[in-house]
Image (cartoon, rainbow, N blue to C red; front, side, top):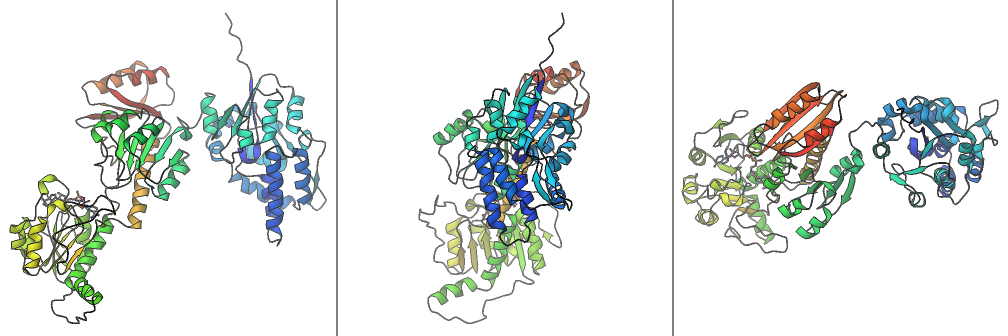
Amino acid sequence: MATAPKAKRYYVIDFDSTFAKIETLEELLAISLKGNKGRDEIMKGIRDITNAAMEGKLSFAESLEKRMALMKSNKKDVETLVRLLKKNVTPSFARNKKFFKEFGNDILIFSGAFKEFILPIVKAYGIPEKNVFANTFLYDKKGSIVGYDKKNPLAQKGGKVIQLRNLKLNGEIFVIGDGHSDYELRESGLASKFFAFTENVSRKSVVDKADHVVPTFDEFLYINALPMVHSYPKNRLKVLLLENIHPDAVARFKKEGYSLELMTKSLGEDELCAKMKDVAVLGIRSKTEVTKKVLDSAPKLMIVGAFCIGTNQIDLEECSKRGIAVFNAPYSNTRSVVELAIGEIIMLTRNVFDKSVKLHAGVWDKSAKNCFEIRGKKLGIIGYGNIGTQLSVVAESLGMDVYFYDIVEKLALGNAHKCDSMDEVLKKCDAVTLHVDGNPSNKNLISARELGIMKKGAILLNLSRGHVIDVPALAEHIKSGHLGGAAIDVYPREPRSNDEKFASELQNLPNVILSPHIGGSTEEAQKNIGEFVSAKIVDFVNAGNTYLSVNIPNIQLPELKNAHRFIHIHHNSPGVLAHINSTLAKHKINILGQYLKTDEAIGYVITDVSKEYDNAVINELKNVPHTLKFRVLY
Ligand code: NAI
């Protein structure tokens, strides 16, 4: 039995602020008025007329007449506009060029603007000249624009409707545009659907009447099941950012086209749960707790971005159980900590801090006694990790002689000396600084015994974790004069907010700098964190890269070229990879590359395949036992 032919469908697309980012007549006028003193005023006038027409407050014919009366352009200006337009095709149109090339014959450009600059743009997208319906200029002999063809239907009131009716098209008609005249095609009954396009402008009066609102052309293609360049419209990815995340991160997400909701504060558990239903990416800092209950109310959550160093506030195990990737910024404030440590070593070695306190109290204590340069002095670093190693390099460049100890075998940078024990560092050095991690076994790493073997008059810094030092013992060794001073940034008990009072045995002791856990707190670190975490998130969304993820096995993937990528996160159970591969084999899928990494809890398999395959495989892969998350990327 013969099947009925599929109904023909036409796509009527507006040009200004839809296909192109700009309003062309405004731009043409701006080009011709370059250098004219009254430019701003004339431009404002033309903009008001455009807006009135777009909102349906002025007929298009009237608005065109008014705007053309202000026009003082010529052929050269039109050429300049074409060059500008080439760079200003709306991004989601530009990236879907392939769709236009494939469907060019079914696409009709309907515009009240002018063919002279529309044609060079849309022809490059495979839309034939016969499908472009727009006005035309009248030029004088010198090439100046002196008017336009008023007989053209598009120059008249209700012009788009007249033009479409004249075409007597047989088939379904979808209209995409941002203005009232586009909606009129639907109102007239000629078009079956009107899609309000809001990537460049969003007009309430138009949006309210639309059958669908499409924030990008990807969304239009997606809801109509048409071929698109991306596997999924990015505007469908909802990102919730709490706690005033840095503007650089916000800008990156905007550029990607995600739907953003921003909040300056953190949210309590219940408030957060109520917001999580559609959220795919959650961005937090240290105050927001991501609990099991929050994760339970977030069925679409793919990623938690911790725009900070620590991840204690996130239930990582529950994230892993759901295949949710967590990213943080472990290194973004390393330099900030190093600089503070260097500054403090100098301040303590020169006794500046004490002298400043005295001077504030009116005491002039000018003397060189017990004040030293740091050049040639021995700096001991306990914990030779990110911070320890960077401090080693900077201290050495200032002429210090660096000794370090780490429980793990580490390569000495520059001329630093590796020591076999912590005691060796403590006994040898004029200044000792602690940069170990927060492992509970490091509690009281520096107690009375360790302080006792330090050189007399040496100084001690702690910018790592509060529990690492036995604070009362340190206070005793300062009071006794055994140690020459200390700089402490972290404490066993720290106030939870600026409103809570701080108390420590170290207060009011001589030559002791106390700072409120600000080692990593700089504007630069905040910016670095914003850039680092947002880049990791975008890279995971776009390519599946998990490099430096806190909880998903780390894979740095090659760029996706001419392939589709299957991303599969599963419970690490025997047989999952075999199951995936037998499914791929059953569908005769050509595998271009496969990457696998597992840890005790999770398996992460990425398979790059040729673009042509039977779509049934997608559902089968989603249903492989132990699957946590599956998605296709292209
Ligand atoms: P990291 O993990 O890169 O380095 C820590 C190093 O300490 C590792 O090499 C580890 O093997 C070593 N280590 C651990 N226990 C040790 C021990 N008992 N003896 C000798 N070595 C030991 O960490 P990173 O990024 O260098 O940070 C260091 C510390 O600084 C962390 O505790 C971190 O929380 C803290 N930090 C403090 C900031 C502040 O605002 N004050 C800001 C940033 C980090």
